[in-house]
Image 1: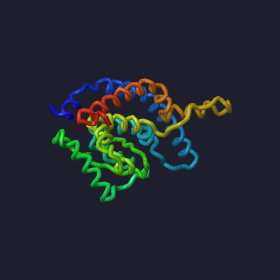
Image 2: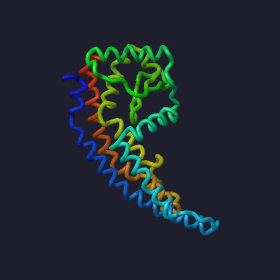
Image 3: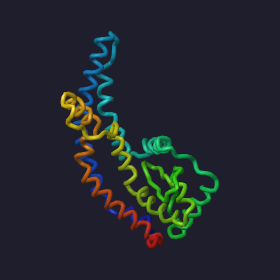
Image 4: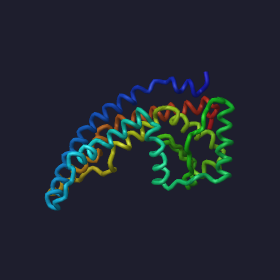
Amino acid sequence: MSPTTTYNLRSQSAGFALYALTLAAHLLTAICRGVIAIVVFWLAALLTGWPIPVDTIAPIVAFAPLAASLVCVICPPLVAPIAGRWWEISSGGRAPEPDEREAFQQAFEELRAVDPKLRAPRHWFVAEEPGLDAAVYACSLRVDRGLLESPYAATVIAREMGHLRSSDARLSSALSLLLLTPMDTPKVCPVWSLPFRGLVWFASGQAIVWLTGHAWEMYWRSRKLAADQYAARFGQGEH
């Protein structure tokens, strides 16, 4: 049995169960967003006299992030390519140069020597970083420029393929889609604005991230170990 087949047979039900609980908790933030949207657009329509379709806009504002996240899990091809491209743009990534493509291909052929059925990622890009790191998100792979210039390219790429070939990449992107924007936990002072800041913090989804953070940290730690074991099956254990 090939390393890829063995890895794909591993149960990842804990991650999907945790995602289901997280999604259910985010229903509360969606309701909160919907109420805020109704109030804001109703006031805007009242003050301006514009015929704003509040009943249509409010549900979209409230539940669109949850719908996009759920589609990313159930049917990744509908969302993942767009999410991966946006990740490249927002992180300052770029298309690989010819020599970088060659280095990537050489590293991948080293892995294919162990498992000829291993497929390259549909989309990968280069981060202009001197480090020896890589990461996956949605259906995309990001590779540091320094990694492609090192002897460890096959090792790190193998590890990230472990995440990409499992549900890890789509779960991470689905979780990201649930959060409107990262926010710090509101400080008590000034007290007069605490209710407003707390409401915005909750409506953004950051409160649920804070609530489920420890559980997800434990899960991702186990997935990192699984990805390392996946890379070791390709003969990369020593590296």
